[in-house]
Image (cartoon, rainbow, N blue to C red; front, side):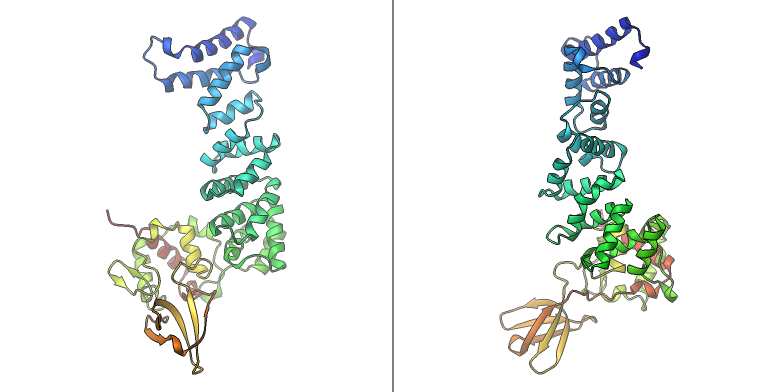
Length: 381
């Protein structure tokens, strides 16, 4: 664009941008600051590729606009088009704000090309979970193999939040090198159990035939009714559900959701109440909770094995505990009072009290309808 302009036109554009930026307070027209900034940005677009070192006034103007646009997609455009160095921290803000669109991805690519991967790693290791999770999401969207050494350690670090680690699995599965490393962890039995379901769903949906075939062997998808494998969760999410039918599935005796969970004034208080579950979990989280109930057991709903001195045993949820006794509810919500003096040993179990394989009691469409129903359960306004 700039090469096709006459020298006079180019100088006019440069001076227009400079005067526009440096004289906001002197404008007589009733323009808002937002209007003026947008005009300045549009003028800069026409000057893409201009060497800032040839005009100090123009460089000042461009850097002022850059400061205004910090954290927005326009920031990325200006850094890229004018080759402005040392902007990794500002680019990372764009990644945090836009992890799922092109501006966030482009910002990450600019960071990598300028040698700023250390800043990305620092953010991933930081204490801000939301920031780290968004960066992990954006890393996956780059489809760049450079993400593998950044994300693979997060997957196996069980000290980190499980949501962050699951997002790391999803992002790694978007590049063949990442998918291969996840499968290697499975083969070596080093993949933590709480991300295994996510890995299975993602790896069974990859587009690389050899990796997909290996995933089907190592992490076979859950089976539905009549031992027919379920579609991967990304495919289930594309299907349309009927909430009215889903409410019926919830109450079916063979499915049994209502025998353990309460929705408003119906059901049993054994597992977590589901009256507002749609505001807490997205549909992907609901599918995981149904298909792999032991992956994310809610706090306070851990199952316990109680071995008694008599040789008997009890299994269920500890619903209350005093100095001399505890109360245990079994899978049928039957409460048992147990004296602590009678207990030989108690162990917290890794398996959820909610049975695995629930999807085998329903068709694929039933499952989709059930998730649609649960996703709409929210606090009454």
